[in-house]
Image (cartoon, rainbow, N blue to C red; front, side, top):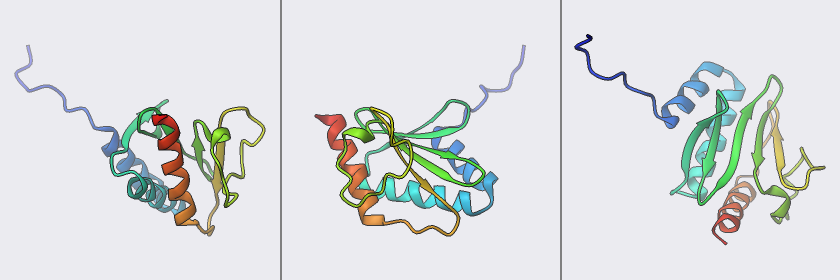
Length: 128
């Protein structure tokens, strides 16, 4: 019988920190910036780690995910089709009935205020 204590499981936030470090390129930097904006928009957001490596942000339900691909960081809003997007941020997954996504590419700009407004709108929709 082992006398060592229980194995320490990493928190979802620690797993996201690791993913950002592992990427080590513009995608890690982009994911880190998007994460910071989500937390600014909703300080009470809960971070989860799902589907073997996808950061997910929740508040009264899923807000969005932060998937990383070779040429993009994709921020998918769970109920994006129901959100007003006055700044036209959604540029991916536009054909679905529920989700909407924003693909961020290397060197791309982030409209920080519009993105935070979209996160807050998603939180409001979840709470309603």
